Amino acid sequence: MSITRRDFIKVVGSTAALSLTGFPFIAQSAGKAKVIVVGGGYAGATAAKYLRLANPDIEVTLIEKGKEYVSCPLSNEVLCGERDIKSLTFTYDALVKNHGIKVIEGEVTEIDPAKKTVTVGGKAESADYIVVAPGVDFKWDAIEGYDEATAEKVPHAWKAGPQTLLLKKQVEGMKDGGTVIITAPPNPFRCPPGPYERAAQIAHYLKQKKPKSKVVILDAKDKFAKKDLFEAGWKQHYGEMISWVSKANGGEVKKFDAKKMTIVAGDMEDEHKGDVINIIPPQQAGKIAQKAGLADESGWCPVDPKTFESTLHKGVYVIGDASIAGAMPKSGYSANSQAKVCAAAIATAIAGGTPVEPSYVNTCYSLITPEHGISVAAVYQLKDGKIVGVEGAGGVSPKEATEKFVKLEAEYARSWFANVTADIFT
Image (cartoon, rainbow, N blue to C red; front, side):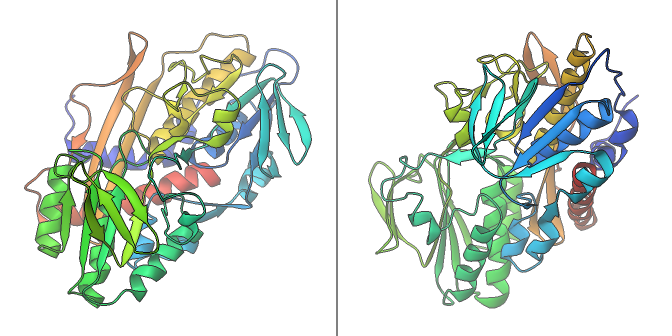
């Protein structure tokens, strides 16, 4: 049976809402097992919930340093005033009430893979299995002059929350005719289309409020996700307001001067001055994964793609942005999909079974305007021990899409967000 790309997108967009019915109940063979999940984002919260769905006898503890989680997907809409950050904010109350998950609020300071312990608040919690979903951390030494302290004033806003609001405030306070500079990091990093959607969302605000202003993207790459679609959309809606400087043309950032608000980029060390500067640093697996020895020399965590068990430490699983997951991008939906594969694998192992052959899915929407959406979607399979895309499945939005089509894509983006967050946090 053939399926059009639009039908595929609609199916993928509703998968999260329907996934409860298709997830297997796996009966436990004997005794109780304890699983600790570190991190309560798209990956960690999904894994905690689906472990309980697979087998209610599994004792699941979710450890997250905050009471609430703020979604990175759709957070760029906050920057243009189309979305309140409260709509991106979720608690863990339903996971406790509806699924019997124990939630500990606190920052994990140590993971001992050999002893299977996780230390939080000075107390070591033990488990039979540990799932680590730490997200990303930044390589603070990668750009001269930009460090963690500087980021409190010149935000990366690549972890949604206070930094998002700070960047929004700075854009709103900029003079008309000013320049916003966004720096895009080298691959791999969280949300590959994110910097380019951010440029569009900021330009949407500027077009209405500060039409003489410009957005400049300085990029450490020569290509990026959905490049043709972004560039066409930028030109259609914002004219020459957005400009992209590739690595080949001197876009790779070398130095930053916070006092002068200047960036030095490229081999020729060209200087760029911005009124608002948004530096998105190079990335690696979250700090706790690094400390626990779960990351290799690449800075990311190698895993068995069939189960997401660490190849460096048995009995510890790494999911989401921190993991090396083959062709899958570091996205919210990838994390959600990986978490379900991991949860099923652990529940099966507890029951004494053998993990089944998994499949994985991802879709990623980007908003060029509130009514112009674009997307990329893919289905993945395990082949020769690697996660690879299924040929002919998914695809990207068509270049010559109608106004009606791109408006539907924007609606699908928001529908996907509502469905996936309901799937995770309720």
